[in-house]
Image (cartoon, rainbow, N blue to C red; front, top):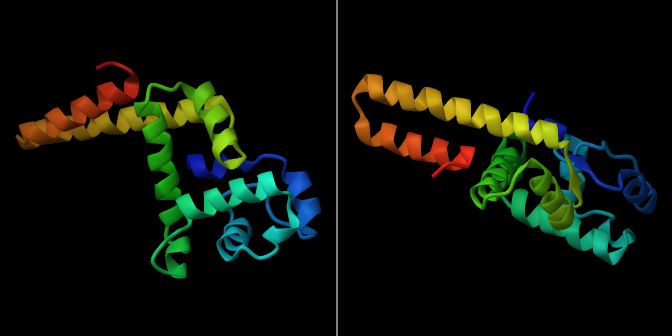
Length: 153
């Protein structure tokens, strides 16, 4: 299961109540993405909530065409965001806190840790494949990325 399947809207009940419509709790579920992409009804939510939801839409849903919403574009943007937070030296608990502050999103720290661990394992595999292929430059880049993600420079 992808990390984006484990990211939820904070204060979901409050948001649903203010919108007077039902949307899934998952931030990257189809109906939630469509609502945030279209902006329909967001005028009904309080200012702080609206600002964060609009920031989410701008940062993760701002794509060339609406079709890209269904080809993984928002999820790829969010994964980049998580990796950037980790590159800044943040741990899983801190990443969850920042997600909440930035976009009113929530994930369990253990799920974030699992995602980061899997990313390190993927980089290890890519590094090994590059070495077997004789591509030392790619192997070096993968090794640096792996150490950075793992918190070792």
